[in-house]
Amino acid sequence: MNESTARPRHAFAIAAIIKNEAPYLAEWIAYHQLIGFTHFFIADNGSEDGGGEMLAEWARRGWVTTRRWMPEEKAQTSWYRYVLDEYGDQIDHLAFLDADEFLVHPETDRPLEWLSPVLARADVGAVAVNWRIFGSSGMRHRQPGGVLARFRRASRVERQVNCHVKSIVKPRHVQSMTAHAAVLEPGFGYVTADGQPAAFVDGKSASGRTQTVSPTPLKIYHFNVKSRDEFVDTKMTRGRANMGPNHSRDMNYFRHHDLNEEPAALPDGLFTPLQALIARLSTAAREGSALAATSSDVMSAQTAPPRFFVHIPKTAGTSFRLGAKQYLGEAHVWHDYGEAQRETAPAVVRWAYERRDYWWLWQTVRESRIALLAGHVPLAKYAHLAGLRDCFTFVREPLQRIASDYHHFARHHGYEGSFQDFYRRSDMVNRQSRFLESTRLEALGFVGITERYADSLALINDLYGWAVPGLKENLGHASAEHVYEIGADDQEALRALNLEDIRLYEQSLRIFETRLALWKAGQPFVHGAIQQCLSDRVVGWAWWASEDMPVELDVWVNGIRVGGCLANALRPGFLRWGAPRGAYIGFHLPLDAEPGDRVECRVALTGQSLGEQRIAATERMAATTEA
Image (cartoon, rainbow, N blue to C red; front, side):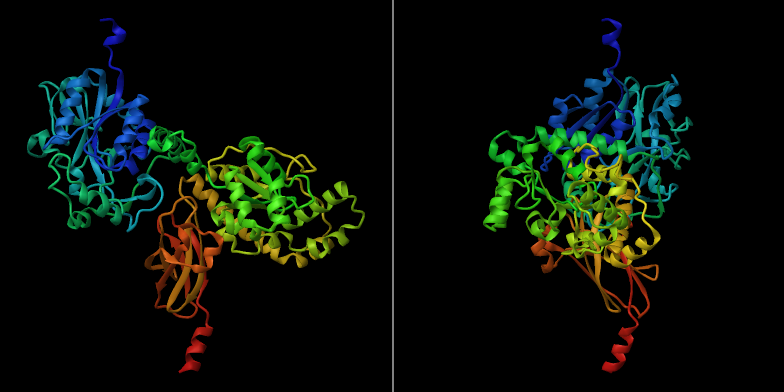
């Protein structure tokens, strides 16, 4: 045997056994790939949620080794033994983890490199890494995102439950394995992550627990309860891999392990590369599933819905639609710039203008597999057909937009009037607001900012799964950031005339900055607002930008959390706009507040504020009058 074939193929690998972990597998594998593990040996203990099919596809691509593993008892330890016997000579270092356990060093995204001096010692046969139990972070319901982003509060490090360990072993020195620790060959030591001898309970590694928690920052972050609903729906019904289906966990287990005593850190810059790896794994799983069949009816069902772009003039919309044509294909982008304009698609002319049958137009859009309908038309024209989630636009600083519009009219349409005459025309006053006046700004799928075009484009591409390039067309200048000189008197007049557009732009900026910050942090965005705020109740609506699960909210009065609720009540007024979840997006929480109190609604997962309102003092006057 030559040296190349004798060497282990995997410097770091993981052995695990799973059952019904499909929603969490991609994140778990992606994270451990990111920190340096190169292969996964995963047993499927009877999954019924598609997890086995996901593993099979990943195995086909060489990322995992898997097989169905259904012994009557001791499924976990028998799988560990199998991996050691069959593959141990191919692995330098093997970690034994569950799919809710993550090896984390909060100060580096290369914990295996940090641990390498300890592992390099010839006398070390295994490293014991203590748990750190994570609670629900107050979440009752499942929310979008992975466990690393959703659950950020954990038990105190020194808690007794964290004396449990998981192990990273050198397979060639292992005699046997329990669920938590190995029995090593004589002469090889068990150490903690700081290189100190592991002091096990009763002096035996088989206990799986150290006498105290090692002070090293490297820990096994153990998300063993998640949200209350996830615990009830999965962990309570699953049984325990090494004890059989009749040994399940109950709500006492949840209460004892729902530990949210302090925030826990993660390495800086983790989420951007992690999301990219999760996307790769998720895409591979979908491509390998039966849902990726090539029959035309299945492909048609999977086609993304048409999106509606409200192209407000002089907001860089031409740059966007030309970039969209380049990415989506010219045949998949239609326009509506008016009945007489050559850019308007013939089917749009026929159904929207000649026959006035908007419903049939939208069926034609879908059947033609049009990805984008764009035009100088108001939101109300097609939003109820597209649905609010799939409507988007750009807005621009109002004074600069009007100045740009004036120069465009003078340059391309032969306009000869003065700038003052132009901006006083009724059709030019509050022009952006009139395009969007039919519904609340917070409800639109996305509102980009012309002056922040690159960031806006990145957010749109992420939201819709596109890769539209950043073109610069029809700007009249080198960039959309060009600033027109406007005299002081004109500025004053323009502000007085366009108060609605100014408010619209300021609100759009606030929403945009919130969304961008969440995106950079790897966290999801929520559309929502408070509709009514009285001393005895707060009422509103909310939905996730890309997920259909209901939003969990916290309500705060004068900076103190007073309760929580779920946005899953029907809001009939949103039905005509095609709101997500069939318009079951409302929330209502009783209050015991006073006039003048400040009430704020926040997304429980991210802390995103949906707004703050003060209870009107007139309530007290009305109550006095009624009495």
